[in-house]
Image (cartoon, rainbow, N blue to C red):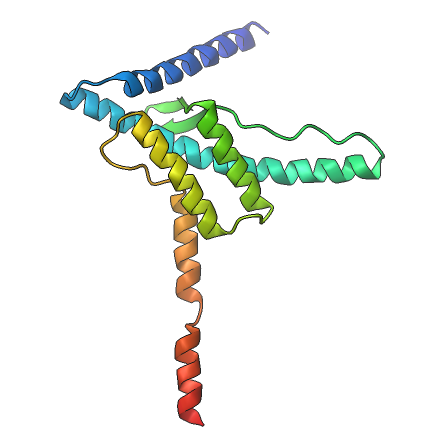
Length: 178
């Protein structure tokens, strides 16, 4: 019991630190090398955070749909929909850390992850819309370079595109055979 109290306190302290780091990056106008390096580090954390929120949204949407189906079958009230968490964890070479982006960004990415999971938007729209959020985060913390979000989806999309036969080439070869 005592150990869990210390863990909770350490986690809360780490969350406060993550939020303070984000705020420090956003408010810093210093153009020193150390500040630029710090902003890049926070930007990398934000990229990881955005990706994790998107994935979390997809997983929670599946679970939520299952809970809704069970509730409907049992005649119970529909459960509350899942929400985004402005804090995530990320693995670094120094161990696990907490990451933070403001709720407005987390909520938007979470919503897009839910929409993607329920096929309300396709892969290209999801990538484009989440990238727009990532661009706003990068602007908020004053990065010189954009944050590239959802690289795993981009790679998946590229590999699927490479495997699909080109219909124009197929059609041309059929025309030549006639």
